[in-house]
Image 1: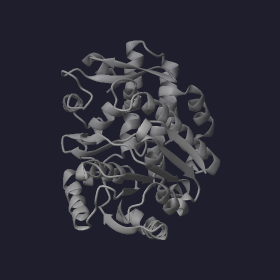
Image 2: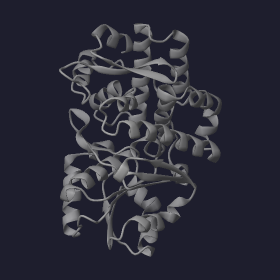
Image 3: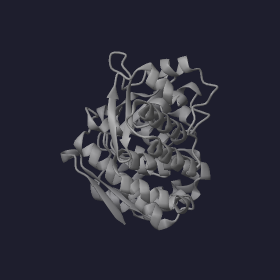
Image 4: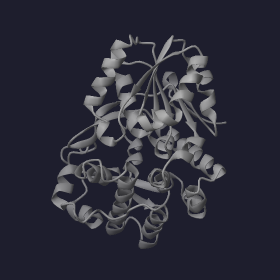
Length: 357
């Protein structure tokens, strides 16, 4: 079992990574919590695959399990879903020492984390991510949120989990599309921070898509280490942590304008990453060869790189101006300088933005 430690003082925690480690969930949770019960938030698909096994391990560790199921889909990461979970928590008599455990992908993790952060002004939180995107990104770092019809993740908080358990064997049940969508965030880490990792992904992408166990373990471990280092330096995104938003400004607009139903999050982020690379080339930050390397690796991962022509560019601009990173109506983008280093660029002009769209 691999481990990545996130050092945040009293909010520090360990990410456990390995094949089949869901079987250690009760033991790991029991080492941290002494609550008589635990609330497990999941969706029907994940519940059918892992719900009984997770509950069995937690019950063996002495927890009474309260199961809360939400429907599949990004559209259910909402205040309405949060309210239903609050009702279940209240009916189940959760107190301030009762952990909320997210068993699922990014939607489940973000929603359950938002509920944990706000119910009784904060209860303990555990992440058990079951998708590649969640294992490498959304389960780590403490961003929890729900969507608004006009924007993604604009209602949320920074709230760290106490424990993350990433079972790599869960990735074997994902569709090919889900694996490819998760790969966008993996590629992101290479672009923003580690050229060597990016090159290694170029050499091993086909093995990754075939779920080679050793390749997957390195992908998840390196991605978590990169994110951990950034979060440790800037937990609440006052500066450097913004580099993790590479591709997300355009990506979130694409998601919002297509009703959160046409694209997976990773697919939209891939479109945003390619768009940001084109903006960087137009601005003279990077050359065409490096921009092409970024687009090529995204395409090899089976990801889209073009903004849908059906989306109105004026609506795109309006949506991006409602992004949570906007200050005084000035758009901020994360643009690559070289592969392995990016720059946070504020007040980006419309000509530069249009070059990427």
